[in-house]
Length: 472
Figure 1 (cartoon, rainbow, N blue to C red):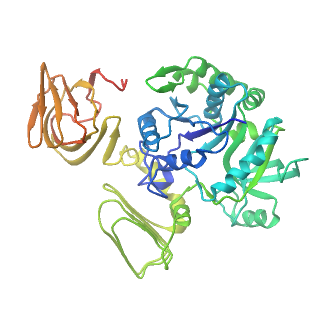
Figure 2: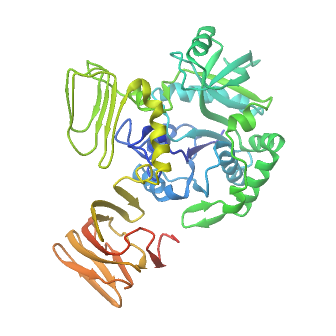
Figure 3: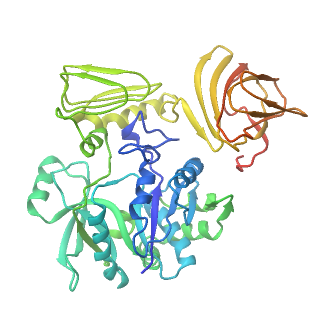
């Protein structure tokens, strides 16, 4: 049986701020290894018998990062579908189901969030294979994680009667919201409850059939969005208006709680959704004192803490049970028992019209990246990196002039009607209102310093005339 992995990469990961941000969320970060969580998810199922290339569903703002991260690990996706707005998992999976059903009417889809950890991949493969036979008979399977503790941060699945003729599979009796500590302990003690992993296996046709029965408005909106989808470079872009018209809901609420075809596969696979800094601490190897560190970290008399330094030395003395995360523009210090409240920081930043919940100081673009290094009255300084072959849009600014100084590499600069090649220590001035473009024609990354000056320095002061990446 062919199985099509569908990787959902639309989450924001707000509880892992300040590392995870809206334009660079946790699934696109290397949190548990040198590879990003998206890359780990794609590689986890690559090479399984019958497993096809992945189909990824993500937001428009992440499309180039997703494509580049898959390219880095040699995974050519079946497709990358773009959501105009987030509508939770049920519509995203429906869009993927339409894509796969059009390609293969018998398609079976393995739905995988892009930001989960599975330490025992062999056991996960066994769990998937156990579910295949039931899926072939019309079942919608979900993977219930055998609980190791009375966790209050996860939803639970209560098992019903055993599925006749199936190896250890059960009917789904109910889905239960995140319980309090007392209820969670009761659930674990009973042996009838599993953590809700948010991973599923079912045929595309059966999922769409059940969605149509229980959520006809959602089914209609997503169907229309797919019917009117269009290709944009290497991406499949769902129709923006139709997809935005869909109700927003999870697979659990929209379908799995209502269908009579739901089965749960008990799975002991070393799973975590890495939904908080304390959860990340639990899945990473620690030292003899229970500490998890990354970066330039000094510890003296510290116990059971997670410390991550991105750019500076971070020193802790005589403390325990802390999470300390340092980035270029923000530092988080929290007790491990209080990390669920990190989301409140993000809400505060949004309400205060700040940008630290959206961007890092380094912002990635399809051509490379830029990083703000100084900002003052009427000026701004950035460090710019252009990848080999990268090309910024042909553009103009109404309110700022720019001065570029090449640090290393070769720059091809269009300024008005003139095209100039610049190398190390050479510079060029771009006056206000002048059409210009920056390219890297070389085989090595281009690094330069940009000094902006003018009355307004916002990123929205860009008029694009031509862009190889089809941005507005």
